[in-house]
Image (cartoon, rainbow, N blue to C red; front, top):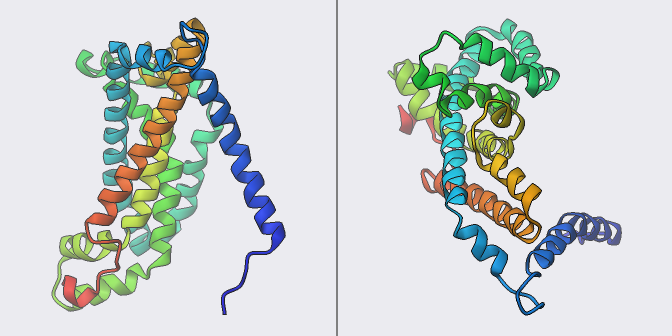
Length: 264
């Protein structure tokens, strides 16, 4: 017998939906104003889509997000797996490090990174790829907690021992047993990283890089109706990007756990 949702639960769901939907709906309604005839029009949206800076900054931030996701997963996933398997005493240190990005303000972080990478080659320090180093640090808590929760949800020690007992080496075990079972956790970290990079303003602005959040801030300070239209567009783009990652992630393997015998 299926339990019905209580009335109080329905009320809280409606209130929660209204809290998120109403401001967005009001912003969308405001973005349609300002037409030459005094009524509603899509002039603000046409102004944004025809701006070459919109396409350039959007692609730059999205590319930086993909690079940050790739580096974070490649760097943290083997580390966290090895920590759970061989170095459980290191976990308190990792948890302490994962809190530091919340403690250190972005202003201090970007100043410290600029001083640290001062001797670095110009093709790195003078290009937006410099931001990836900062974004990996900002995304570290979210990627770490997502992957750590995913690894704790499966018995990695038993899976590893079972895979090796069937003749698989370390690389085969990690690639064909551990990775497929952590797809959901990796996607969760990727979603949060994408949202962080697509909305990060302070570091990009202080480092003098013209990313999508900096462009949004500029439009917001110079125009009214296009700024509201850009807010709606950026919200839609972020959700479409996340939906695309979900489709890609679930399309490769379907999110199912892989039996050890078949993987090995």
